[in-house]
Image 1 (tube, rainbow, N blue to C red):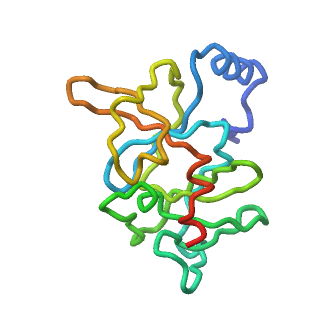
Image 2 (image 1 turned 60 degrees about the vertical axis):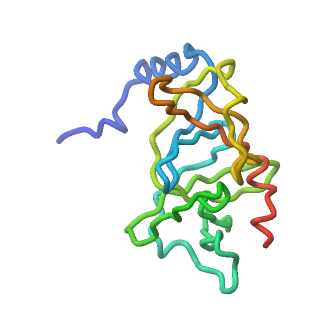
Length: 175
């Protein structure tokens, strides 16, 4: 009988994984893309869960604003789910014609919402001292951004850090 690697890992292996987490410098962030292929990040401390939700798990609400996809039952707690692209003023909306949608459950001051994104990249340690404020253009997204990291100076590729408090408290949830 084969053993499952997820259930048969040794305490020593878990200890090594935790040491790796503690030895990293900076802060842990979840990196992801929205529909326009722009890359964003949220602090791991506000991310409660990442869900690959089948579209039929998101219940549409009649007469809801276009940004809101509906509600999702997350372990007995009903949360609103919105297409993050609309918050950021992106020209492309999320493709909802697929089997699953990536939803990031974000919690801020006991309010939990779901942010639907194009795809999740993963977790990464980033140095907060390298956040730049100067390159944030005036746009709809500006009120939801805390800054950006320059990933590649030659191609001018950057990773934009979102302000979860501004997103959760946005009037788009109420519209």
